[in-house]
Length: 248
Image 1 (cartoon, helix red, strand yellow):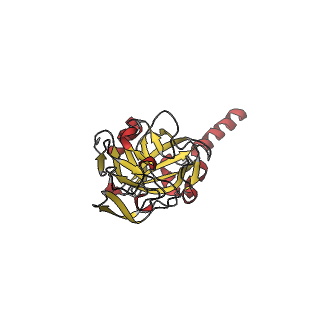
Image 2 (image 1 turned 180 degrees about the vertical axis):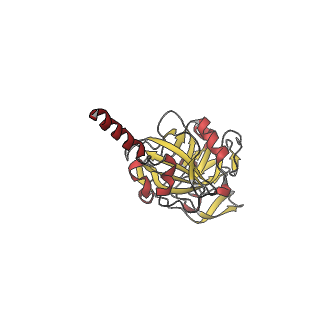
Image 3 (image 1 turned 90 degrees about the horizontal axis):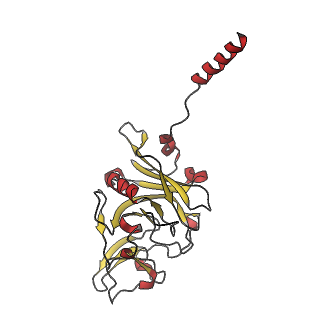
């Protein structure tokens, strides 16, 4: 009888223990959420890994964060991770940090996102020419003869119909004061990006393996995320290895 009573005491005590924190509480531990009401949180397995998990959260009117979708499997850069301020171009590393999400594009038609969306064609490029700071990390709608950037240092977006079926621009190392130069038929920036740190960091549909620094998920998941994202909710993406996600 004493042994049974002891077991019952243990069980009762276990029932009375507080529940483990819900996964949706994670955004409350993040450092740079700001006024975002939508968050995508990407956690890598380690600093050298190219495998990650992605979770989406939305803050309700009561101020509480709630997880929106089931956890998604994703891929990151073949070079692992680096803190955004230390990332170097052409290393294949994914920048760790917190970034805004403000626009989207794709080889396929807009699946119904509220973000500004551009359906790209064979004339559209994303430039990463570190000899031309004014156009670095900018979308360009053509490769005109008057351009100042080199085609060899730019991505022709339609050349990646699987990965860029749909994509969201991650605002890492983005320039400011962008205007259209009608003479050279290209966009130029007044406040240029750092040409050492890299360009064209996107959240996009997965290909066959690791990325060159972007974050990728299955195309079906990409569509779900696009339909959910709302610029009025000031969406951000927080990305880092799981061990350091609260510092990102």
